[in-house]
Image 1 (tube, rainbow, N blue to C red):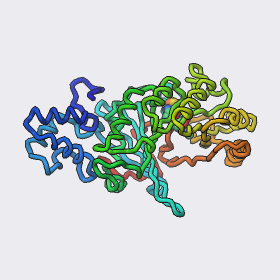
Image 2: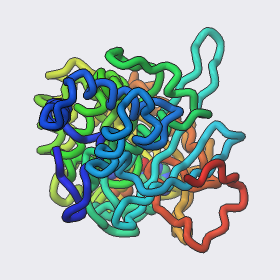
Image 3: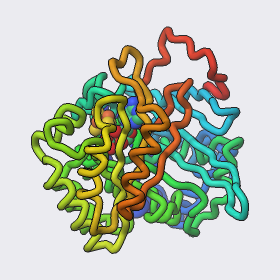
Image 4: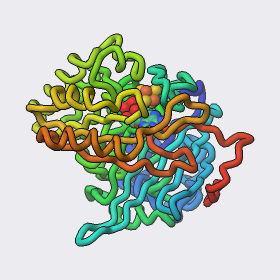
Length: 380
Ligand code: SAH
Ligand code: SF4
């Protein structure tokens, strides 16, 4: 797959089709097993370029370097917060666009083991324009390619301190971290490339991340949700609902004018019925806006009777925002209305506030801006 943003630029190895790579090697008289050697090599945490692939002949390494980009990401700037439990990378792409991804670690509790979630971007910017979202406020830049999506995950996989690469073996399924499309962009407005990136992430010879460990979050692009039923039935679906009444939702999530609440809930129900999987309904809680108990009752009506799960997320205000997050007691009261009615509901913490790394809060703003509580950990 060579869907390049920049005319004439080399494809990234992360998205070059495995069969095409074998054919490329064959044309050079190289044996087919080199394809696996190369794909294995580029996933190793200790490798930062083709030159490091010491089990390959030097001439082949040079030719790889001339033909492919080792990564579609030109540079990474990494900031960490929450005592190292949250880290945000600002990825600079070949044409200067910036997108972000976030790594969140949840330490082991009780008998459970440590969990890691990587939040990635699907577009540079976003055209949906939700007024509470930093990405939406910045407008649309461009679609990301499958390689640019995969390389965000590969960045964290390769970072030696993340230890994610340690749990990886070529050919095996990986289940020790989750990937959520909750960074910049509306994934289902870039569905073909996002679906291709999921297939690449899934490929056992690459990262081998199980589909059940991947979540696509959407503002409610109904045709894309229906495509997920057929094309990615094992991937989790999260719907950014944020309001239980159409006028309010159109203000908060403007795409609601095209696909209103009833259509979005119907599509969620179709997904749940056809896949047998539970769908998350995300609800950002904004003080005095969408957090009344009357609206909690309306949300009960939307979430009842099918495999749904409501996630309440206090708003993480963007710079200059006219809104603030609901106070904790209102979040709890809202949760209680849902729980009493038998709806599965949880309150989600927002991570990485001080580095603007809460998922969906992402908007590259490194340039000229101090991030006082953040410690740069790598600038590669
Ligand atoms: N475009 C997709 C996925 C990216 S946004 C979507 O909207 O679902 C991921 C999540 O972060 C969404 O639920 C979004 O509404 C939420 N979000 C955006 N800005 C936020 C903010 N300032 N505080 C809390 N959550 C936010
Ligand atoms: Fe786009 Fe999601 Fe932000 Fe809305 S919340 S503007 S859909 S990234």
